[in-house]
Length: 215
Image 1 (tube, rainbow, N blue to C red):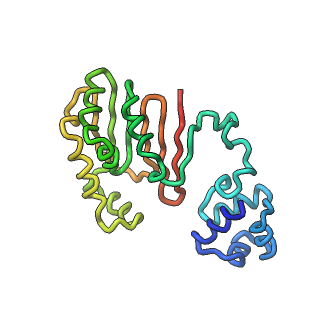
Image 2: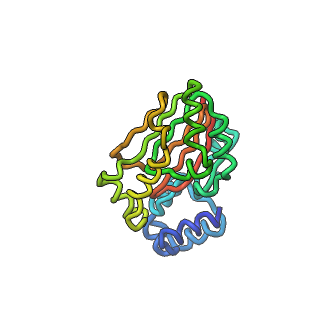
Image 3: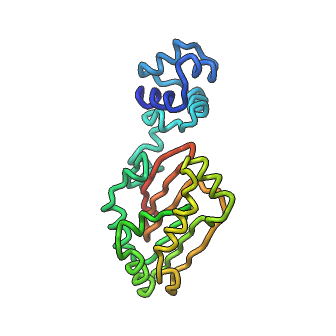
């Protein structure tokens, strides 16, 4: 837990004195937190807000209600810090196993089609077998796309990434049972649903990935 707080402070550019000022405590109090003491709930929330983190990411043991195995997280199958941490085999397995529905919405996700050279044909075959597929991409000409590009420091490449992903669809885009749409909404998470399992990638201020099984 000490390392979590220290890492969050480094990411936010905070030292002990600055954090102490932000949450109106003594510097010695912050140093005690760094040494392992857990602050009261109200203070934990103030610290999380100041650092742009979540309470549970800084002090997970202080929130037993959301730990693995609790009723609130009984359906959580895994958690990852970044999308790149998810094993490629898991993505491939989820795509192969899906028989009823595949729902994906995000900005651009060419990696889904790069993992399997025949992904477009494979998913089209699932549509022909009765599966429902819905794919939502950001409109590459939408102003929000360039705003996100700047936010993520992508150097103006996001519109091209979206167009590249769309080009990978091939005949899948015209296959009955598959719906492809473009959105013009600011998204701070991407959702990948394969039958009853879902992966949600949260970006921007809060970064993390969760895999859950829903009803």
